[in-house]
Each structure stands twice: as C-alpha cells, then as structure tokens.
Image 1 (spheres, rainbow, N blue to C red):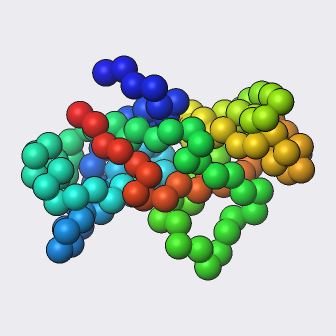
Image 2: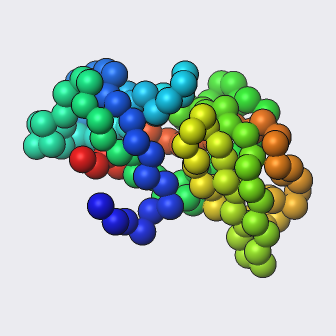
Image 3: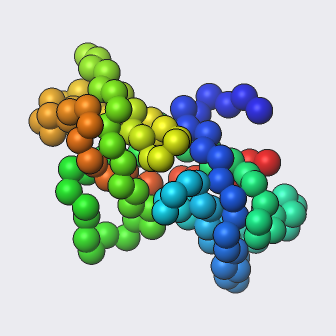
Length: 138
C-alpha cells in the first residue's frame, strides 16, 4: 500500500463501538497507546473489520496537532503522549517526528508554532488527532 499520507500506523483492532450511522474503531498501536477512528458502519461492514484484526491508521501529517501540556476539557478523542525525535524547520511549515513506542508519528505545523513552542528533541509532547481524521486501511 502506498499513500501520500505521512503516517501509516499499524495497529490491532481492540474494540468496535457501533452507533446508528458511524462506528468508533479502537486500535492498539503498541504499549498503552490507542487510536480511535470514527468511520461509517457501511465501511466497517464492507471492510469486514473484526476485533483482533491488524490494520493501518492513515493520518495526514497536517491533521496532527501538537501540545506541550496535556490538554483537558477538549473534544479530541486522541491525545497521545509522545517524545520529539526530530525537528525540521522550514520557511512556512515545520515538521516534527514524534515517537510513540516503536512507531513514529509525523506532524506538520506552522513554522511560527515550531518557533513559539520551541520544541526540543527528547521532550514529551502530546499529539492530538480528531477521530474523524483517521482513515483505516487493510
């Protein structure tokens, strides 16, 4: 599988919560880290998703927000503790490589944010990803 998305995170389905139109699919991606994706019930059925199955979470790097402090009182379903493993500065955007166990998450944020927040390699930060921004693939 090849995509233009910077993040292709392998995980195992641990839970599928079916609603009226959409389902929340919970993936274990290593250690205590989980990702929650919201997709249509039709997609769950068409893909034949089942608990215990290995799949990929596809996330475009600009969909990953980064916070220095763990947010509270926020609607984002995915708040993942990570460590900064690389900071690339640009003119308009910067890129952060974030380690979450043995997998890496890439975030593309404005260069102003990179400078204002002064990210450092080794620093603990929090990746925030809306559940609707995570595409699932087999």
